[in-house]
Image: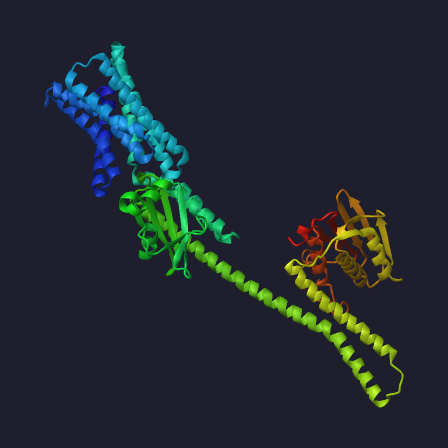
Amino acid sequence: MTADRFIQYLSWAVFSVLFVTALSHALRDPRPVTFDIALFFSIPALIILANGLTSAGLLAPNQLLSAIVIGLFLSLGYVLLRLANDLAVVARWVRLAAAPGLALLVVGAFVFAPQLPLWLTLLMLLYLVVSLFYSAFAFGREAVVARGVTRRRLQAAAAGSLLLMLLFLLVSLNLFAPTLSNVWQISADLAGLAAGIMYLVGFAPPRWLRRAWQEPELRAFLTRAANLPRLTDLNAMLREIEHGASTSLGARVARIGLWNEAEQALIFPLGDPDYRLSLNEPVPSARAFREQRALFTDNVPRALPDYAELSRQYGLLAIMAAPITAVNRRFGVLIVYAPHALVFADDDLALIQLLADQAAVLLEIRSLIDELARAQAQAEATRLKEDFLSAAAHDLKTPLTTLIARAQLLERTAQRHPSAPADIVSLQQIVQEGQRLRRLVLELLDAARVEQGRLVGALSDVDLAELAREVCGRLRNERHPCSITGDAHVIGQYDRVRMVQLLENLLENAITYSPRGGTVEVQVRRAGDRALLSIADHGIGITPDDLPHIFERFYRGTRVDDRRFAGMGLGLFICRGIVEQHGGRIWATSQPDQGSTFLIELPLVLEMEAVHA
């Protein structure tokens, strides 16, 4: 057997296998697209049969047979355009022109066969080349926007169409260079063999090949899946699941609908937030959730006429849906949409159910993580409440005890000796402890205002340098002198009352937590449109573990002894609120036993809207 004969028989075998495969698939799954595929591969099968019978002498060449074979060749281009419209998009004018063009050329074949005039032969060749090229273009254009399995199938279909076009071009070269007919024939047979393989991959890929294509995307999705429940945003996790499903199945769009028990409907967080899908709807997504099984609709307009316009509007022809359920807990439904029916295969139902089951596991894990986080948050809130009650009771107890004791003493003295002179010392202590109680209550009120974002009031021009000198002069003592450096005047728009409170809190802390004494160093300077303040002491310092938390509500450092340093842990929390509500920031640096430095950066001009933002 010669090489050209071997290649020819091999290409015949490939197309014959393709026809048998496509026909059996169409009989198992009778849909328009499967019949189009079977029809396309029946054409080369009939041509091969006619050539085989003629070569074996079982069929005599005649005008009718020649016209039929020519008509079969021409119909390849037309049927391929129909397939292109199934998998991609073919312009309406092309579809309308292809059928009458084919009819006219077939009539010409029956009139002039077997000796066709050159002009008719060229017209037939032009029809085939244009239809095949346009089909390849349609497949390639759709492959650009497709993904996964569908992209590979479209690429293969485009390559097959170009190879089939090349086959006809090579055969036509016999008209112009008949001396090289053997070369053209061998080349054409090779192009036909390659086209058959490409069409096998594009239109009827074996299951093992589809799974091989899907495996990398599926493995990548399952690899990422382990970390998905830890994403802080539920929508981010849903987006990853949808992307993995659409990529694995080769579809453009995937959506997850979550079951809302209160509304008795499916909601779509990444779709239209106002859309609610009732379970009474006949659409596959609602049915899949209602019946708890995977469903596939290859042609929405035909299966659901009421949704035909919506399907055309969004370009969604085929829908596959599977319930997301774990341990009898129904989370929702996974839906994958495609603009063309051929995107999905029958065995993809098992794959989408696998992806839906994986999504159920992820949502179950996420639910457990959220439940644990809520429990931890509740425990933390309980701890903070207990810490607050303990700190408040401790700090309020001391002045209250002193107030009550002194008041009772004054009461007894007044009862026994009505004419005795007033106990000035006891009255002064009552006033002092009363003021202390007042400060504690004001701290609690200010902490609440910080949470509400309403701590800062009206703004006015304030000289921070002058204010620092004023506060330093009032709070310094012999053991804790206060030095001020920097610019003489730093004027900005601030709430003066809160700025005084900020400086007083920080300077009092610097003095309180420096039991061995030492200078408190204050620096105020201007840097462009910002004011920079720093308050440094030489006290007990802050540990590295405590430093990130010192501005939190009710937080007290591990080196702070409640018996030596009274407080509820609200001072620095309020300081942060004052600074941030002025549009600035506050931070600290420290080394244990070497002192601490608190740094503040504030804008010099702040719009009133920013105060209450």
